[in-house]
Image 1: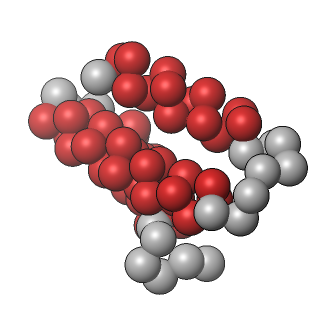
Image 2: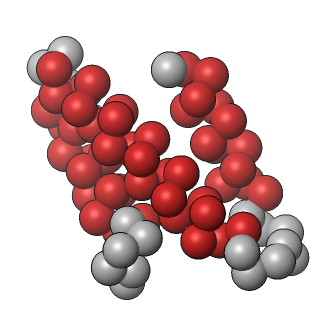
Image 3: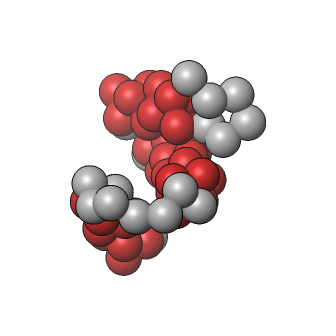
Length: 67
């Protein structure tokens, strides 16, 4: 899971570059999925602060109802 988080962080860093538009919806999907899974793992481990923060990230980065 740690490798997936690092890859996702790298994808977020690449987002500052001028990339084709198709990259950004894909990024929203990847970030929301990884943040959702991470929130679930954090909640199971009793880290409610992290779980709450990651759940907010899922809401902000969700590809279905974008803000």
